[in-house]
Image (spheres, rainbow, N blue to C red):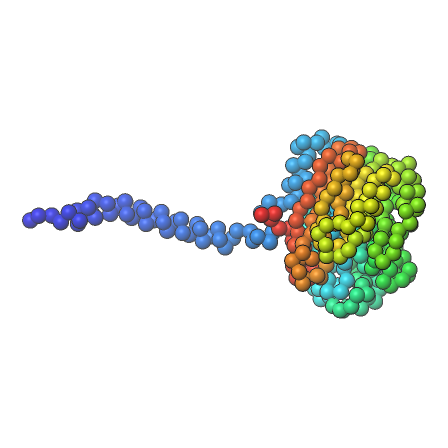
Length: 327
């Protein structure tokens, strides 16, 4: 009886077909597992703290000093509502605390007073936050808080003083109220100053005098500036004028905030100016730009700034920044 050539072919290749089937099943299962357990796009696969670790490979650790600077922090309105409901004042910083604590110095712009009996409300433009928000700042490793901005005075001088005392009692230095403050790291003295040019005009003579004083107090002068117009991606002429003024007066690094959008970096006479870091902790969920921010990593070799990097973040749930991929 003549054999069916197709039947013969099938029998000869049946073991190979079985192996191929098993391989395909394994491949599908592996792909499915990867899909469900892979990190989501909203959080980076690699911990951003590795950026600081990588810098240690190129700069001797005894000389390397990292300064972390962030966008606006406003523990008020819906941010305050969120954390009070959760009774967890570290919650906003859950995904960024590792990076913020990884620096030798961490600087924020704190844009609302922390006062007793602060109303828990998601409405209004008069900002305040529960004093327990300081727990989150300590958790995030904040060393210096700039209070020179247009909302710190929303509850008068009493609110400012109450906030300053609270921060100081938790070993957080305060600048932007009464001249420079000093923080020494590895023998290098960093001097912090803060100025507000929103809803008021800064005293240029005072700036020059204070920066000159700061230069005599230490090694690196860092100036925080609250400036510019909200919701713009580029600095205006006034911002540029003030930035150049403080560098000409002796500032080594200028850290800007207030626009609530990310604005670019400029190198002027060899000094770094970052016009705006966007937002860090804020409830402005109504636009993509206001949900975005950058955490700056400023790496010094002793007194000299040698590297600047920016880690992108995006705000979720009205209060919680999470590190995202640049891609």
